[in-house]
Length: 302
Ligand SMILES: [Zn+2]
Image 1: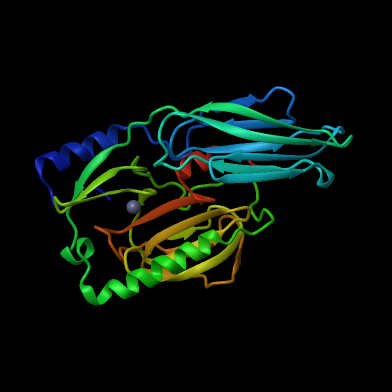
Image 2 (image 1 turned 180 degrees about the vertical axis):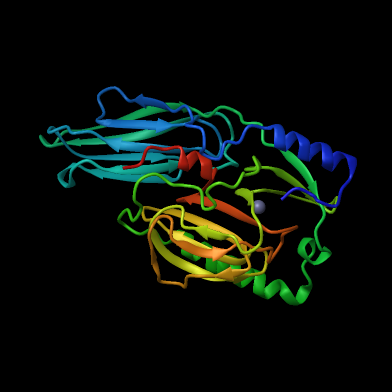
């Protein structure tokens, strides 16, 4: 959220935000598609930049048994016996803009195998910056909360590391608060109370307290509980290492283990945890990459 304890700079920041065109998936974003010569895969993304997601689709090729794709630490396998498939790769928002080599291993039905390296140039991205004022305990948490915070961060890391082998989603991802204007604050550099800097790992969508928030895609609820920083929180596993993460709710309407369909109500907007007013913080994980939710929502998933 932006700082609502008004100063001239904050008002100006709010005006700039209001004048910035929304990129909350309302406008069809331009996508680029590329291929690697001789490889039966199609790659689609908004941009090759930190925080972006790449959709990889396999195409029919009767000569191919299997293709393995590796980008940095992320590995994906396409088994052509199972028909055509889809996978997602993420470029973490903290990734250095530079050239990376995507490694592609193609195993053919005649037993031959080739390894290719495809250069991906990750372009620089300018992330916004802001100053925020929050309760002092949210910048320097009281020592008695340290154990809770540590426990919660281990719990969330364990959940996000458990990759479900099949895709649970259904078509493209959508906004959890359809009709509400998102702030363009993914990857924002934040200075809390003039001191500690952090990076905003998701996007904020402002809505009145109590507004129903919805699952951005179908999946399984793996967490529905109160956490120190993110308040009442829901995490949905969509399979293949893709998770959506929703924070600061006033009331949870699902529980751990629930199956949800895209658009199902999961909780009500609130301001619990480290928050300056009622809003939804929405973030996305693709394997170990923290990515822009709107980059995921832009992709034409089947
Ligand atoms: Zn946020």
